[in-house]
Image 1 (cartoon, rainbow, N blue to C red):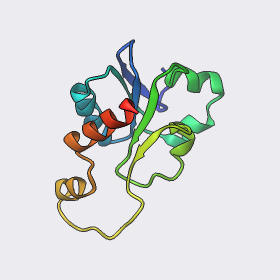
Image 2 (image 1 turned 45 degrees about the horizontal axis):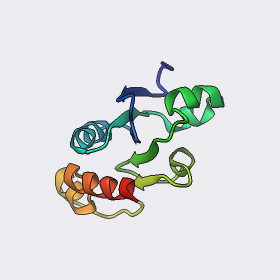
Image 3 (image 1 turned 90 degrees about the vertical axis):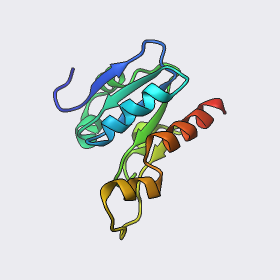
Image 4 (image 1 turned 135 degrees about the horizontal axis):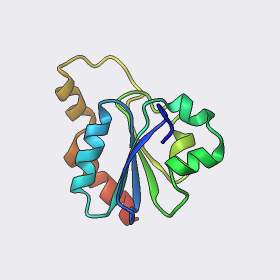
Length: 126
């Protein structure tokens, strides 16, 4: 694998790619275990490095199969559309000013396993 660009935990029959960075990878792994559909979890610690790769390397990380892309990012969604694709789904925060314990903030914005699992399951059903 390309050092620093991504790491993958995959079901070969994946219908969804859960792409996350940092602490969100644990959340993506938990969501993947709850989804009724097979999934592939991709840890992408450096979005800019991934975007700088040639297309063949990008395709090795995020296969060009029928799996839909879902981004889970506890920060800004800026730049992730190029990874998610036109029909991808992006969860993130594009506003600032919340102050509370991390778990309370994540629950408030819906970045928790149950909420994400429900939304992704609905998305895949469409």
